Length: 135
Image 1 (tube, rainbow, N blue to C red):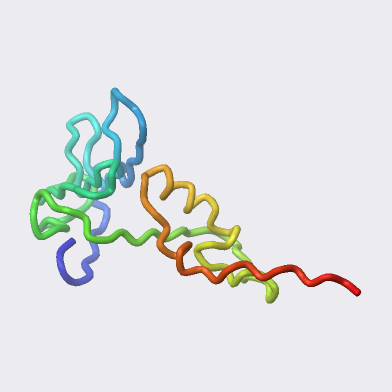
Image 2: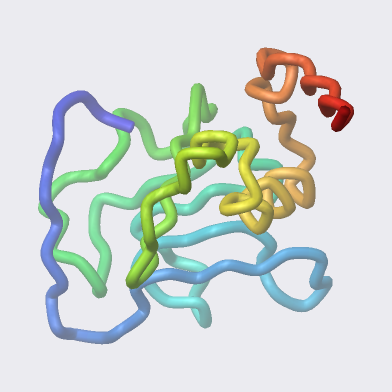
C-alpha cells in the first residue's frame, strides 16, 4: 500500500464497507474494502491467497481521490491483522501474557491457518515449562 497514513471517509453512497468470502465457486474469494460486489469493483481487494491484490482509484463506498496502493495490481509484502472487541479485560498475571499465542487469539490463528498463512510467532515461543509436582 502506498506510503504514509491516509484517511478515506465513507462517501454515504452505499454501506459496502467490508466483504470477506472463502471457498465459494460462485462468488469472489478474498477480502475487499468498499466498492460493489455485483460489478467486482472494489476500492481495495486482497485475493484469497492474501499474496496479491488490486486497488482502484475510484470507489463508491469511500471518498478516495487516489488509489490506496502505488499500483493497480500489487503483491502483498505483509498484512497486519487487528481485532476489535468490546469489554476485553487485561490478561491475568498468571496467563501467557495475552500475546498472539494465547487463548484470546484462537480465532485469529484459525483464520490465518484457513488462509494458508504461517504463524511465525509459534516458532519463537518459549518451550512449555514442565508442571511442578506437589510434595
